Length: 267
Image 1 (cartoon, rainbow, N blue to C red):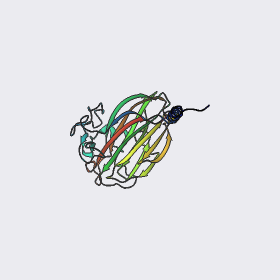
Image 2 (cartoon, rainbow, N blue to C red; image 1 turned 120 degrees about the horizontal axis):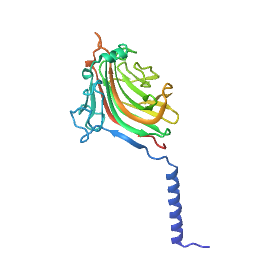
Image 3 (tube, rainbow, N blue to C red; image 1 turned 90 degrees about the horizontal axis):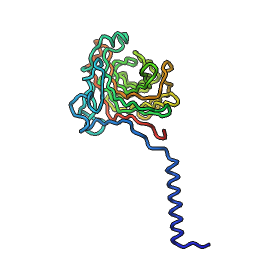
Image 4 (tube, rainbow, N blue to C red; image 1 turned 180 degrees about the horizontal axis):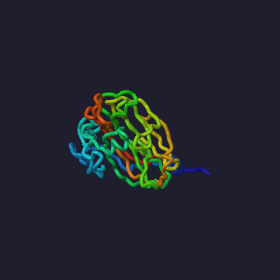
């Protein structure tokens, strides 16, 4: 049976539409943002403390006032978050808990309380830099990190932390220990921005760590914890060891930009 020109055009259109629909069905779903912050106006006020803006929090003992939104050398846009080493507050209990490994900590947290149903992979990322003199290899005098915590039978547990250290390395660890046990490392340059990312796979209970897109390694969740599938928060952190004759925390600064928590494609 012959078909008219109009019929042929209609059939062709139907086939093209069906093919497009099939391709769309086969493509992974777009990434689902849970929370993003570029620390730009008007959500964030230049010169003001990060805590209290856009639901960022920090426990009072852990230098809540040290993180400040600033227009100084942002990674992108107009503003970033600065933590000056001089503003990290000494705490006796931190020094005691870590046997002198740390002397001051800044912990800046964005709650999300996202239910992964034990099936999703969550990516926590940010651009991070440290400015200050490089310390000797293995001397983790000052560091800046990102991390995430989830619910567990012990209230909360880390799903990974990834830090840039003053010794010129990025280090991955669980985030559950008072003194970190490093799982892996990569060399980095101080005074430059680096993209840090943690991909926490709640189905496999593993975390993959990336530095500037390079896989540092994939490691299991802390086997000492029982994870229940809810991501409580993402965080940006800064750490300083006790001052010495050679190293002073006032000589360092940590900066953070483009913070993001999202569900990965296809999850």
